[in-house]
Image (cartoon, rainbow, N blue to C red; front, side, top):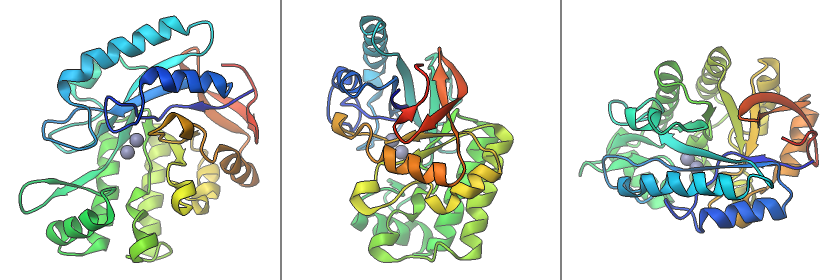
Length: 287
Ligand SMILES: [Zn+2]
Ligand SMILES: [Zn+2]
């Protein structure tokens, strides 16, 4: 009995260690499976994404590690793919031909700044505020609505297996108190997006990356009962950028999910997504 994690970044993008370090750590932690999901390359420079010339090596390295550790842990090959209209999506030709085990589809970039730079909603605080000003004239409501609209567009026309950090647009609220997350317009955007996840059978990850930094989960526990009511497939991911963060907050999140009535997580079992029972200690079968 252990955990799985399908969302993690290595030193091919903005993560902090080699892929093998993550696999070894996962084995140490008695995890049942690990998926590697570097930020897929983009056609413009980005501090976070993998450069395109590294992509073939990335795939080869994961394929080699799948083989090397086949008796110990399933290693899955993935990418966290941006959705940017007309530029990148989980069904971009480069993504389809990669034959990934699954895709994590995420919206980070929601507009362009005056100098043409793409503005990421999870940029550091000062860049976030500058981008909000230049891209949406400081109007956080418009920016947040655009963020969710882009996610729904991705769900409709470029459906990923997992949607990454569904409400990450809230991440700078802790510092700047930009909007009230209980406002009806905001709740409506989250709910419309969740309903579309259900319709498209897309897995919603509970992303723990910021849990110890500022207490954020994406999506937050206030949506767990809605996830349950809508019977949306969920999984727990840490979006790890370091091997030590592979299981960050998993037991606490599991407790919150159990409190909300969840009994199953969505897991890859021999390469197929299945509903698997879980407890506070992990999933209840060996996958
Ligand atoms: Zn992301
Ligand atoms: Zn990520």
